[in-house]
Amino acid sequence: MTEELNPTPETSDGPRGERIAKFLARAGVASRRDVERMIEDGRIKMDGQPVTHPATFVQPGDIVLVDGKPVDNPERTRLWRYHKPDGLLTTHRDPQERRTVFDSLPEGMPRVISVGRLDINSEGLLLLTNDGELARRLELPGNAWVRRYRVRVFGMVDERRLASLVDGFEFEGIRYGSIEAELDSVKGDNSWLTVSLREGKNREIRQVMRGLNLHVSRLIRLSYGPFQLGSLKARELEEVNGKTLREQIPDLPAPTRKRTR
Image (cartoon, rainbow, N blue to C red; front, side, top):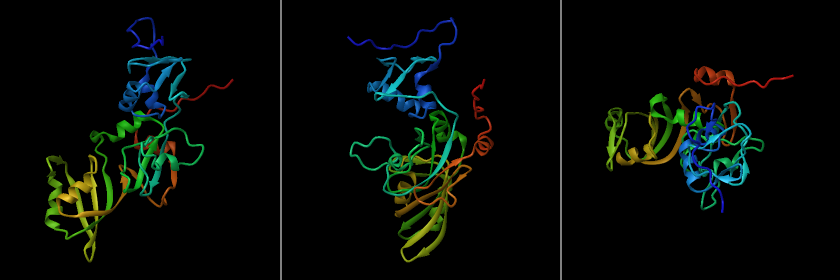
């Protein structure tokens, strides 16, 4: 009979280590929420035993396996800018075995997860990090980071309705927050817009435009907070240097330095 790892009991006998969900998030395996689902699915083991609860603690020397593969201890927090082309999914596992963002990354990349998502038909800036805690933090609406997009729509644009999105918008029973949208150019039935928002519900821009009787034919993310797509070409990847990362996220934990003898 296989022994299972239950939650580590509360003790006062010293440090218990780090919760396994946080450990795996910091290691870039997945967000804490996704780790909890992976535990439910029986995909995680520690020291050869199935982990059954996210309150299990990892201590120095413990061996953690995900899908049978060992997970290294978390490294310093790193962040990359990636230009996602259309046609790639922002997921690690696709039941239909379609191409994903993570399939397209160069060899030698550490295990990373995305900060938010871009759907299969969307393009532009996608932030990748090896730290699930950072990803979760940057996704929270509370950080008030603006996400800016270039959007091509088909249909007649009503500029008054477009401007009214700043007060929020409701469509098919879903309430969307403030959106800043400006008309940049018109050519026939096609128009280019610049759209900025702070929350980013699933397919928000496409749904809101549909509520305005507009069809989105192209959607490109230009920026996510202070991080810009810039001149990155499709599928190009560039790491944000540590100094810039600490400037933009001031309370980011300082990197630990290995002692040398």
